[in-house]
Amino acid sequence: MIPDSACLPGIKAQGVKRYFGAVRAVDGIDFTAPTGAVTALIGPNGSGKTTLLLILAGLLQPDSGTAEVAGFDVARQNRQVRQKVGWMPDVFGTWDALTCAEILATFGQAYGLPNPAAKDRAFELLEYLYLTEFAKAPARVLSRGQKQRLGLARALVHDPEVLLLDEPASGLDPRSRIELRQILRDLAQRGKTVFVSSHVLSELEEVYDHAVFLSQGRTVDATAADQPTQQRGWRLDAADPVSLRVFLDNADIPYTQTPSGTEVSVQLAGYDSAIALIRAAVNANVPLHTVAPIAGKLEETYLALNEERI
Image (tube, rainbow, N blue to C red; front, side, top):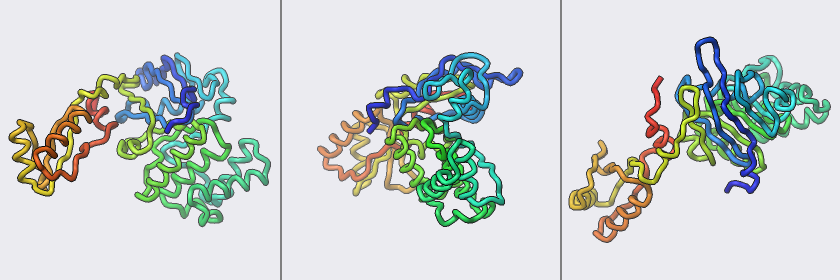
């Protein structure tokens, strides 16, 4: 459940543009990301996601437009923005010879924490992100997934109001992915603005409250693609597959049989259509036991946009 504070914008962008010569990396982005919520940033390769995140982190200046983070303008109040932001890039670079605790304590001191408080914060975050056993281990021994968790700890070291996460689940094993989703929800419930980019839409599906779609450096209005009438694939299975196929034939509902031979897929216009089909199947004594969307809402919406492929 989204807290009442979610109506307040943790991030606000209006007409943001950033060019690199002839390349229009960001070419007019408008959106808000509320506090106390997880906002997903979605788009194909080259759509401007990382450039946008760098602008919001205060690491790139926009050529035009305005962007505010935690109420501060990224161009005019860069120092304040950096104090409010926790930035996690898609590739975590650090000092491999230092221990995990030393790395986090060093960043804590860089953000102004006294040495004892920085050390305490380091061990607190290592425990929070299931890295306690590596506190005294050099960073070079960490796996890709463990380095990702250390990168998130680094982003959290100064207790920022806004988190900017670029592919945080990259390299994580299944259990760590589940733990990451729980952590992101926990951070949002604590009132933080969580803005996360990922190519793995199924991961975002489990955690997001809002979504921003990018294409060719611009925000895309996904409202039309997200209407209840939008056709989407549904998976059906029954204890008696033959009775299910007979029911669909009699109801004149086209279907495709899956390679397993038991399930079928159909195209339905949203949840209301699925409910109507279930009701009709039950009335016809079809023993349905599975009715589920083939893909998540984010993936369906993304594909329905018919945007560019790179």
